[in-house]
Length: 375
Image 1: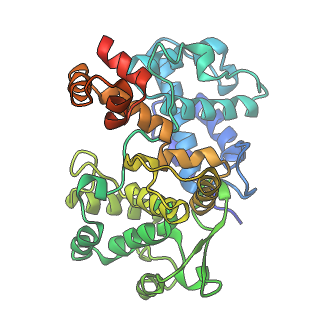
Image 2: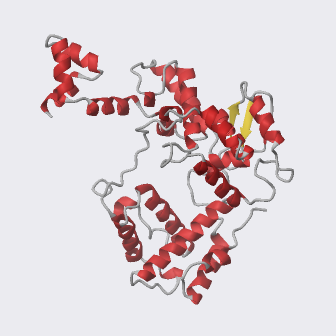
């Protein structure tokens, strides 16, 4: 039986009128674990973490409405003007397009529960996304791997192991198999190794999408993780902590060792990026586009590498690989934007005025060369 959030405790933590809170509790009790995602593969109920995010986001939205003069009497009273106001409020606060879209997803679920399935529109229906800087990019513009930030993953993880061996082994699992953070928490090493060659990743996956990842020569890491198994669950999360408590501890340990954007400029997710970039290079024969190299693979090897990256990452669409690898077009654009008029003039001088040779030296097209000269 799926775990269900303690809805009453969650809702009571927010400043909402008693009668309103009670009706919201009843709605959430019935629907908080319902699935609304069209891309989700698993039909299992949502995780406690997702249920909590959904309930908290809805409570915060209604609190914000009341703080700004809107007071719907019941959750059933949600109207278009309320959603429109909230979107403009969030945009005004400088929240990202992705964050606002997530909030709209939760409001859209609520609207379905109260019989108003067409009430909540897309973000672009409320504001001009481009004008407000809310266009989401699914193509990496920078390399998020640890090596790109001059951090030796092996050394840093060994340092972290002296503080917390469990956090360190979870980082090793992320680096070795491209696991997401949650997947590394919930992996049960003993049961995930179905055969000597493949690791079965089924717990904590996004959208319930299970996958298999080649083990290759990494059994030693799985053995190390198995030695730290929790005897009750089989995962590496200790028995005396809930998943939420462990998540807080995990990020505390990383912060202590500088593994943050504000610290060393990295996050643990960068280990997954590195794993997928390495896989792409192994299959295609050339570095991932985000590495900035000038080499290009042939089309067939590129497509096969993308296919394997998407499969190993646990995504459904090939374009999702671009979030880890970038694209050659994006890297070409970055190079063009980085070239200055002075650099072009110097290259032209070295090439005795030959624009084709100067452009080739700079790694840009002739058109980009002309743009840099006229800028």
